[in-house]
Amino acid sequence: MSQMTDSKTAASPEGVVSSLRWRYATKKFDPARKIPREKWEALLEALVLAPSSYGLQPWKFFVVEDPAVRARLKEASWGQSQIVDADKLVVFAARKGFGASDVERFVSRIAEVRKTPVSALDGYKQMMLGVLGRPQLEAWVARQVYIALGTFLASAAALSVDACPMEGIDPAKYDEILGLAAKGYTALCVATAGYRAADDAYASQAKVRFPRAEVVEII
Amino acid sequence: MSQMTDSKTAASPEGVVSSLRWRYATKKFDPARKIPREKWEALLEALVLAPSSYGLQPWKFFVVEDPAVRARLKEASWGQSQIVDADKLVVFAARKGFGASDVERFVSRIAEVRKTPVSALDGYKQMMLGVLGRPQLEAWVARQVYIALGTFLASAAALSVDACPMEGIDPAKYDEILGLAAKGYTALCVATAGYRAADDAYASQAKVRFPRAEVVEII
Image (tube, rainbow over all chains, first blue to last red):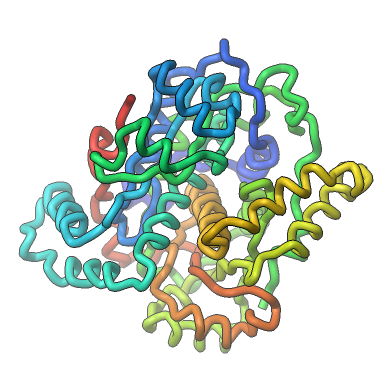
C-alpha cells in the first residue's frame, strides 16, 4: 500500500474540516444506538495503526464490554454516565516500565513483518534503545498514547461516530478494576464512543476555539 | 453544525483505514511538490479544531516558512532533511506556566462565542481551575498537544498529504531560534508535511504494527 503516491480513498478538505467541526465531547449518549460493526472495526484498526515514535506502540487499548465492570468504572469516573451509556468504552493504557524488552519485541515484529533477520536490525535497535535514556520516559510513553487518542477521535469524527475523551477518571482504581498492573499497563484516559442522545444539550452549543490567528503563527 | 446527527461528509470505514495504512513517517520529501492551498487550509483548521481537555487548547502551532530559520532548525534537529525539504513545517508548542489567566482567557472566549455573560460561566470556570491543581501540570499540557499532533497526522493522511512527526529535536534550541520563551510557549515536537520523494526507500517498506490481538483486549 505504501508505494502509492496517493491514498485511493482521499477525503475532501471540506470533509475533514466539517467532521472535526461536527464532533464534540458527547455528554449524553443514546444507550440504545450501536456503532455499526464495520465502523467499529475501522476504529479498532485506527488504534492498531496509530502513529508512535519509531512505531514502538508503547500502549494497549482495553475495550470494556462487561456491564458489571462498566458500572464499577463509572464509580471510578466521578459517576459520569458516558461510561455505561456509550456503546463502546476504550481505556487507553500506557506500558508500565517501558524498557529494553519492549524494544526487542518490536524489533522481532519488524523482522517478522519485513522478513529481515533480527541481526540486520541491530543499528536501528540501538537507536531505539536510546529512547530509554530519556529523562522522563513515562511522560514520553504517555504522549504516545495521546497520539493514539487523537487518531481515534479524528477517525470517529470522520465516520460520524460520536465520542467523548475523558481524563476525569481515577487511574489507580481503573488499574485495580481491570487488573492492569499485572498485565504491565496503566490507565491514562478513556474514550467513549457511540451516538449522542437526542436531548444532549451540549450537542447544540457552538464550538469554542480561539481564533486561528491566536493559535497559529507563521514565522 | 453540531445539531446534526450525522456529519454530512462522513468518510467510509475503508477510507479511514486505508488512509492510516497508507501514511508513514516520510523520511525524504520532494522539495518541489507543494500542498494545494485548500488542503493546507484544512490542515490548519484541523489544528484549530483539535480536541483538548475542556477545550482549553493549551498550545500554539508555529508554521515556519522562512528558509533561513528552517536551516537553523535543521541543525537543531540532528540534521534531518525533512525540516528543510518538506513543504510545510509545524512546531507543536505547549503553553508555558499554564495558569489561571489561561483559563480566564478561555472563559472569555466561551462568553464571546456563545453570547453568554462571563458571570454565568463561573461554575464551569471553577471546575476548569481545578485542572491547575494537577500534580504534573506540564505533563498534562504536553499530552493535550499530542492529541493535536494525532489529529493533524490523521487529517493529513485523510487528505493524502505525507507527513513526518519528529521528536528528534532540541526543544531548547527551537525555543531560542523561534523566540518561544518570550511568547510564553515551549516546543515539544514537529510535524513536517508535503509529499514523499519518489526515491524515499521507506515508502515501500511494509508497515509494522503488533497484531490487533496484542494491542486490543476485550474485557
